[in-house]
Image (cartoon, rainbow, N blue to C red; front, side):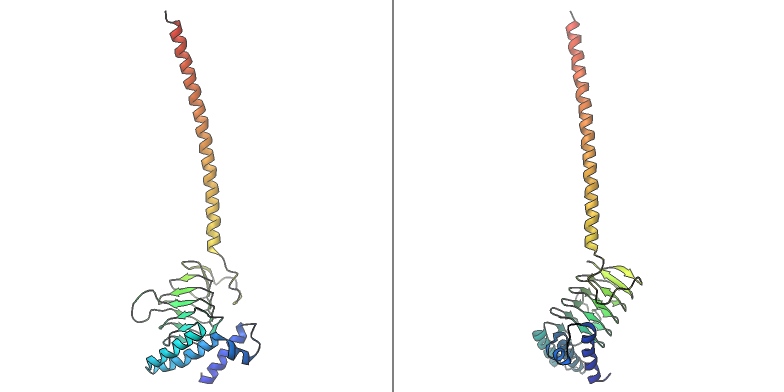
Length: 240
């Protein structure tokens, strides 16, 4: 796509994904996610021409004004939508496909100081919830949804739903979830607390059973000791 066609598609992505968008003028002037993407497209063009310092200056200026840090080396496809965007970090070797949605606080980063490809590759039509971390040089498949605050450390197949820390797949090729309804995902933390509550209930019942058994055993022993003492007392009284 040409430069102007790309800019138009970026604006279209805002209207497709944000019901609060009212006019093109409002979107162009006030949407920090759009500003960060446009600044990145300029910085990336300079980066490919090996004007690394100027590219980084533009990247850091964009970070200062928008709160969104995109390394100029990252590759971004069409219609990326960054909603609100404060705290978003996108690493140097990250690759993002088309029609991706990223919410605030997302990190697409690496796990160490290795060289070469060290950041994730995000497929097409992926939704990444607020605060999620995708760390490492692996692929997140097309049409995947990553829940808020999830930490993804390994490859994710297409058409999956990932939640939790560490992230685990809770749905794959299953019933369709609305793209923007990323709040209605299964919560593994709640499930874990429910399981712990059930185990605590079972342990309490077992403790009560053991206490009752010990008390019953103690009463029997006390009666046996009393009978034995009375028998010895009778024997002493009968001895001349």
